[in-house]
Image (cartoon, rainbow, N blue to C red; front, side, top):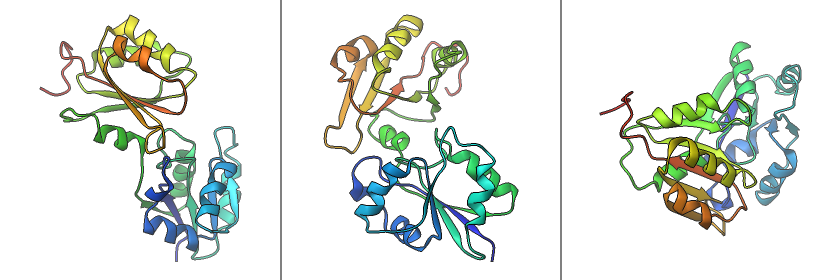
Length: 227
């Protein structure tokens, strides 16, 4: 049998969101590959799962990936998880998945929580499509801002607490006072969803926790992605 790499979605906050299939996969894996072992061990300890766990994060070297694959037994499997949500979406997991496919390892998705789809589910507007841009880069923002300004689709991005107001103020200045839905600490105790124009939302935001921002598409855009 081919070696298997399972892409396991884990809770973005509330640990009760873990799926039965995700738990079974983690229990049966030879090894678990995590973005931050300290974060992932909290979940694994909660589930009483004890498995060899290895870290692969943004600063990890590509040369480390083959060594991780070698730890999978013949016919066995590894489970890839990230700090929260679905691996491969704005985290280093995509690099491992890419290399696994190159060497013939079968990649199997185990669906579950995602901050992206969780935010979209409470957006409250018709969604014929959307544009997801991950985190707005610290450098070279011009193209990203142009995309947001011109997109007829809602644009979604992730942001950290120390940058959220700064980024929203930049957007207010560059694209105007567009309607937004800003989700903070989704599924957690202090979950908060802010709705309104950018100028209305900024003063309300509490700068703690992780954020998902949805910016309403530009109805006046000359480049129509949808009608």
